[in-house]
Image 1 (cartoon, rainbow, N blue to C red):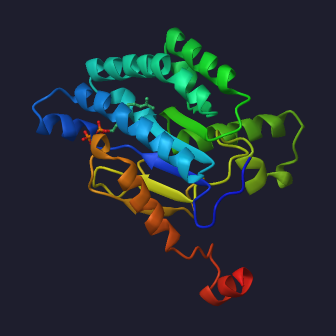
Image 2: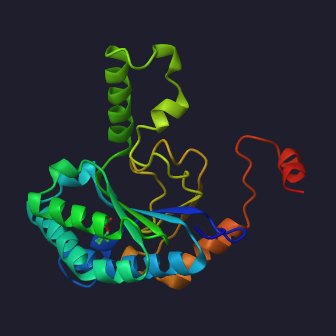
Image 3: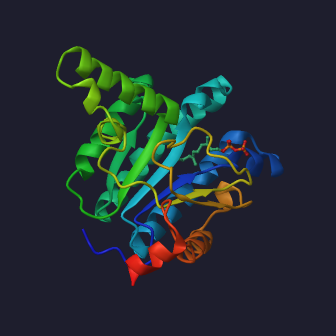
Length: 246
Ligand code: FPP
């Protein structure tokens, strides 16, 4: 993997919000907003790769989104299948490694097969790692990791006193991936909405009023520029950080 350019976040996570409002403002059904959002996904993936970001994690469907009207959920699932069919060749050509995280067993067999095929086709790619979170919830992720540790402890493979941050982190969906340096949320709300609760502990947060279908490369660059201005302290003082980076 290439050297990460100075001040470019290694890992960017994105909450893609505002598709429904974008569609309503145009008198269109909500799914038209999701469809328009695919174009922003493409622009964001391209821009992240061009700017030297190593990992991009997109929140495509939350655990809670199952509670939306049946028609919207089914149209979204159809859109994921279609996007996989249409985009995987291009992603592969651009050396992008695609991974899906979340309760994938909740998805239809057809979608699960397409996901597995996309993952195995791009598995050896060495460029941008694109994580797509589907049927994902931050609390679900942590609870599942705790369950895995409990199972190992009960079977005697893990001593209870050895359970700590590292052992729990190794069971999370994004195990082995550095924490997001930057979280972008479109659509005007300023909350985490049960996204990567563990991994976002020290991430810089960047919010914009722009609705996801209107998000483009210029907006992504604006988020990167805001990030480049930040001094990340991870709980230390400004003096300590300045000495360490001299
Ligand atoms: C939130 O907007 C958006 C979603 C729940 C779906 C995101 C999905 C896409 C952009 C489709 C393509 C994704 C991939 C990875 C191919 P919202 O519906 O909550 O908007 P609202 O707040 O305006 O109602």
